[in-house]
Length: 233
Image (cartoon, rainbow, N blue to C red; front, side, top):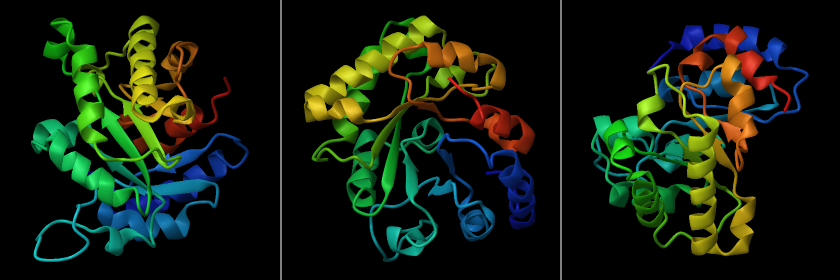
């Protein structure tokens, strides 16, 4: 919940120039009210996504937003983000309904990850398996599916999962995706999210099965975010 319409326009006026040469794929999830502005002002090499979407296409659901309302404004939808799970009590079952509906029209980035308490109790794999199996129930393999691993304990805390933790989680996720969809799931991109900054990119990308990053606070500053976007492995 950052940036006004004016601030969004100003962001892209700076950011577009800073990332004009990169070959990396760029995806930004603005707030709902800024989707139109982002679509109009972002460079053609930047994909725009929605931070959420409801599972019904229209109706009496005050405060929600539907696929039909945003389908002309974005290419991606972010679902199951830790804030939606833990601050708004979204269940795996609700997230699953959203995934089933959204993937018909959009690329979907499904977020999974454990809390600090779950991690300390050795439940990381249990939580990831549960979120993947329930979140992807009745979902067929699709090249439009992306998974983002975001350890909740590393979001906005300054803590970052080390190479060992990222290796373990991403390898487990890959294994589960292959169990769900077969060997073709080896092509599904898995992103890492959790206090991603320019100075920890080397360690993050040195881990296995890391196909990109999901950036939080560092993305609000166009110069810092551009440094991340322009990173070369």
